[in-house]
Amino acid sequence: MWKKFMMRSYLLAFLIFLLMAYVFSIYIGPENYYFVFIPIFVSSILFWLTKNHYKKVKALNDLILCSVAALAAMAKALNWLKTENKPIHFLFDAISFDVNLVTFFIFLLTLKGIIAFYEFRHTS
Image 1 (cartoon, rainbow, N blue to C red):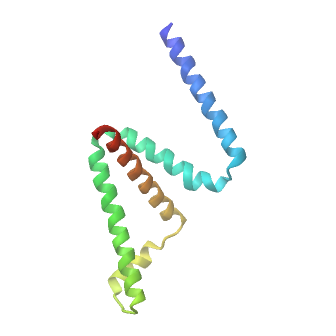
Image 2 (image 1 turned 135 degrees about the vertical axis):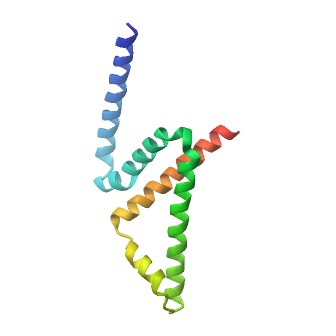
Image 3 (image 1 turned 45 degrees about the horizontal axis):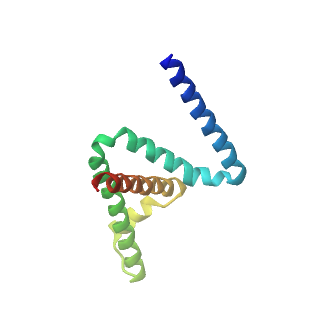
C-alpha cells in the first residue's frame, strides 16, 4: 500500500514538473533554458549530491571564481595601461570567454548562491 502511494506521488510530482515546463516553454524562449535553467538545475543537483562535503565544493568554487576574476582584472588593467605582460595576456587570451565558458561561470555563480543560501538557512 505504501509503495503504491509513493509511486503515485512520484508520478504526480513528475506530471506537475512536466506541466510547469510546458507553461514555462510558452512564455520563455529557448535561450533562457541554456543560460538560466540548465545552470540552476545542474548546480542544484551537484549541491544535493555533495551536501555533506559542501565546504570542499565551496572552496574549489571560490578558487576557480576568484582566480579567473583576478586574471581578467589584471589583463584588463594591463591593457588599459598599454603595458605588455606576455604570460597574463597569453592566459587571458587562452581563456577566450566564449559561450560555453560563460555558461560554466553562470553555473559556478549559481552554485555559490545555493551554498550561501544553505549556509544562511542552517547557521542561524
